[in-house]
Image 1 (cartoon, helix red, strand yellow):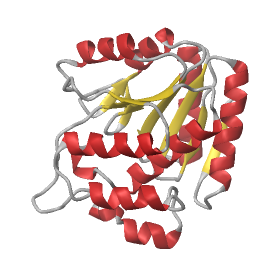
Image 2 (cartoon, one colour; image 1 turned 135 degrees about the vertical axis):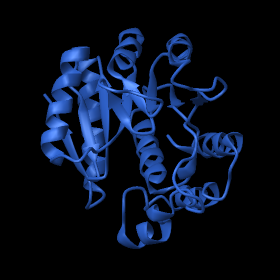
Image 3 (cartoon, one colour; image 1 turned 90 degrees about the vertical axis):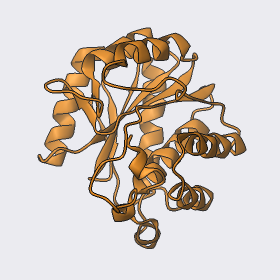
Image 4 (tube, helix red, strand yellow; image 1 turned 180 degrees about the horizontal axis):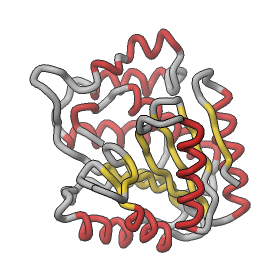
Length: 240
């Protein structure tokens, strides 16, 4: 993710979805957050996420806005610059929800050091965890940079993940037809991992979720479906 967008509506969606999953699936022991942090970009003066205004999101009922405590936290996070303050805010929120949380932020992520970074992720992920990979843009295989997660990196983490864990991946939509893109990406992920993903989208971003255990996947699918039903802009897909 990009530091420029701390606390925007996408953060609200992603962390409320994480909370919903953790509360719905008590067999998960914790939440492992892997923010692939990149530096701010864009032309001067355009503050983080102002185009993703929380006030308008609350008025329109976008994903996560039913969670008033988290919405209030996102407003606070929009005003901070420090990664440590951001991590502290997210950690404190999940602690208040009694969700054990590991945030992988002490090793800096760069394109040049990504092999070392993901090796440490593999070594330090706990069992029975929701492991959330949060790149700035999403998955890429052609011309990747620090904004992208590689398919090979996803596979390495998936292969080491225990059967009681869930892998969650953030993805921006490219300029293509939404549903066709989701189906094609699900097919590729299924071929790569041997597991058919579940996806949820607000037509701006999409999350792919993968579970090795068929029973856990079924419970995850129902969990994602119930969350999608609670917001009019959301759709979920089971890529069986």
